[in-house]
Image 1: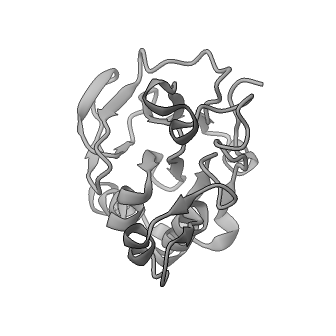
Image 2: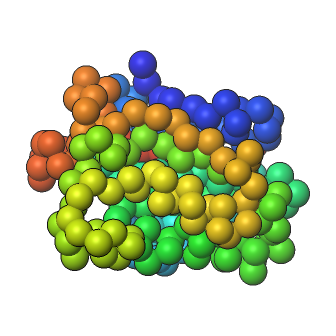
Length: 205
């Protein structure tokens, strides 16, 4: 299997998207990208290719411009605003999630395009699952946990999407734990510094 897609976003008809796997042939050539720094910084992409800057979310309403992120345990999240033809690609690791990268991306789309959160559709791609994601006390406390334990980063990002105003019925999750499934996904925690990266992308057509 190569790229995975969200049936929810597939049903919109005006976007093309994909969540990468270790078997995907997709690269970021021809796509807008970021120097990802595990932050809450969101940038507007207005040129077709290359690195836009340092941050962890890209947004655009330019038809044909593909925004993309790289992951290998962190969660890729794709947003689509049908009312304004705007899209966003988000890289959400624990640091970015704790810093509210999802809310920042939604807020930028509201400010730049006049988007309304209740109109958004969102898809959360594969990342390290709660089955495998053990975190220490310092990280755990950032998510309201009392002690070290397993962190459900997908659920936390889903909660933040809902808190930002996106209806739960308009959020989908493309499942698959990147740590568990070595045959399908790269995993930084499993493979270390030499782990590959998976490209997730979205564009307005």
